[in-house]
Length: 135
Image (cartoon, rainbow, N blue to C red; front, side, top):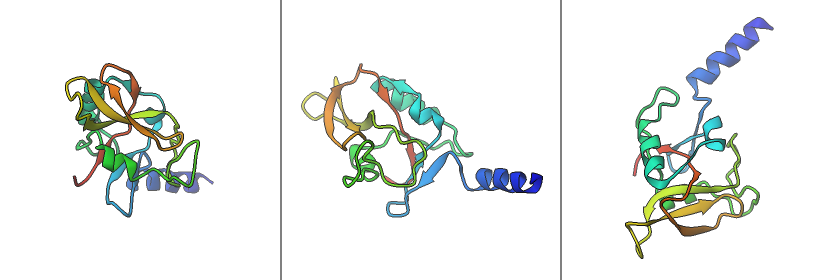
């Protein structure tokens, strides 16, 4: 039993237990407990991702609206999130995409409840799920 625990712990460290690779896009998504706990304003969310260290990587960033939408599964609801993620939060999440109508005060947000999107004031406090990989 002890050797099984060691193997599981080793596999978790080697294969990134706190992140999830999307095979279709090649993007790696933050998938640790912080996804369900951390809320920030838009500017603080960007800083948070830039300073994040998960699974030995330090090149995290706030995802664009298009990137975040790649993990939405419209066949699911509450949350409308692709299968395989451990942190299945159905709240509003920040994206790095500014709202063209008011770029100084608004950015796009996405809800995983049903997969809806809308602009939001940047001073609001929303959840954050960081990403790494190609743009």
